[in-house]
Image (cartoon, rainbow, N blue to C red):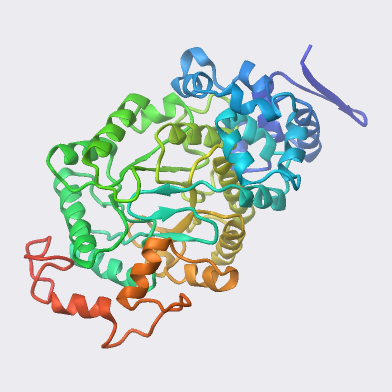
Length: 479
């Protein structure tokens, strides 16, 4: 007889285990239907949510979604669990935990202290009982602050990853996009390049290009070239100027294996980057990206719903104290998140779960061109996440990444949010923007003209490297 059973009207619903209950309680999404784990009707979903509300939080420690014996992510979650931190909610059910989170008396300090006592399955289960506004309200209470050359995640602040990708990794095109983004006040989260070709010479060339830009203009930010972690470790060994080490991660050992990684490799990268001591205000040296559907696409989902698996990826991230984590929410495609409604819900869930687990969450608010979504959907999610206290968003030229072939958010979007919600860049970066003549004291963009000091410095470098001293990174004069 099932431990999770309920009769609604004339229908009796029984769920074999907690993993099944979590999947059936999830909001509708195409990936769970593809995996064969989704609720077959709205009524079955309500039955699962009703039962889930009465599950004690402690049950998730006894019944992990993926077996302990076969999965190193599960072992990381359970072996690192802090029972003392969980004490304030240890005797609560999922439904009672939801009510506690929404109460007036629970604030940022209590949530920060609680985070080590929560597991991904606990927070994923709770999110399944919440409306969108609940996800926004609770996430807005959470503050997860991280530091390298500037401070990301403070209240009243919104940072931007400047993403200057180029389809051929042309240093001149990348440099032009970086300067464009800086002129819009973007880049305080990171100047992060997805290389079109994941090879060592390109990785090192791009690392040097951005490092010279940061040094030449004394920009309080950090760089990252999003090559595979093994290439980044090799680049460190060759003396390349690596600030942040990047890697895509997932919520199961098997999915991470499909990415060519495991926890030991991430630990090696974390140590290597730490030993460089390139940070000035902090030592958070890792950058992770995730996305609902990654485990399913790798055939490594173990019958678990994609949102719970996504939350488990945040336990991997948490272990390495990153500067940045973001869910690339609509990037994998409509097979996993079909339309704007599903993308919006997934983005809010991911942000909520990451923040509760103590992870410095951002979001790549995005969709692929064959999804049933458009930029209006992204504006909606953008606004909701900003209200929810998202640490950072993406800044892509024109919101159209011409290398990765997907739609994201633009350099302009941060100014919409900063005007509507009174948000500001990271404090160190804000001071730099004002000193260089990009923004005034009210954080308004200054006109670009002959007195624009950032562009004047670039013009003074005519005949030198595109963003630094010497010849261009490609060996050609960019001017």
